[in-house]
Amino acid sequence: MGYGFKIVVEGDYACFTRPELKVERVSYDVPSPGALEGMLKSYYWKPAIRYVIDKIIVFQKIEFASIRRNEVKNKVLYSVVKSQMRGKGGDPSIYTSENRSQRASMVLKNVKYGIEFHFELTGFKDSEEEDGEKKHYNIIKRRLEKGQFFRTPCLGCCEFPVKRLELVKEFDENMISTDILNAGDVDLGFMVYKVAFSDKGEPINGDWENPKFSDRADSIYYHPHMVSGVIDVKKYREELKC
Image 1 (cartoon, rainbow, N blue to C red):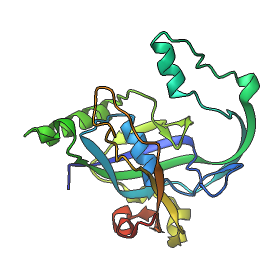
Image 2: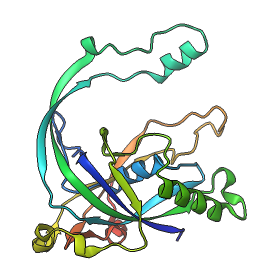
Image 3: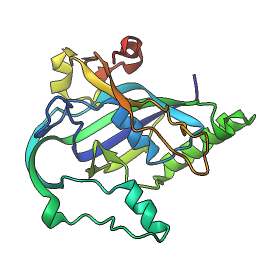
Image 4: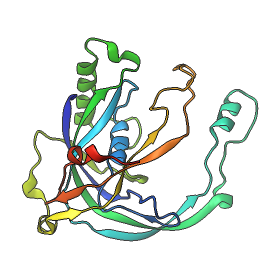
């Protein structure tokens, strides 16, 4: 068990997309642990550590909003970007007028979550240092306290940034919405826990200077319950399914 943290995050909108709905985006009622891990990586990430979500608290009433967004259908190819950087030509641009597609989305609004998590050493890079764990703890703590990040942290989709993040010692469960409390024990069904890449974050060529990673990945699912607003992720993580 690594060093642990408790944070409270808020946002105007969030979208934790259900994978079974391909055409339109529809959000889960609550965040997936994998999405929250991605948000934390926006504040601090190193190959030497991995984040583990232990508990999620849903403070606000679950409300949805229907919106329409313009999205691009294609992605910039890494190979084309690499070729241009080496001066070998290639156009990495995406022209929205040619690739634009309008999609409807059912997203969450006015969200507020309590997130309890810890990090673990992966065994990569500098994790063998004697003070490695303490060093990472201090850096994470400082960056969370100061709100420092290297890319905008978001709630599921990059269009929905975190509005406020606060590092706390304990959660004030008295702030949980009456609607959430009255719901009691809510069976959330099978949800995506995270997307796990086959390379486990380690370059398949073993070269961190010029890394090559695998694109192969599997969705890992779990079957959580939300009890009076609290999702004990640690408890339900014991029965992950691929």
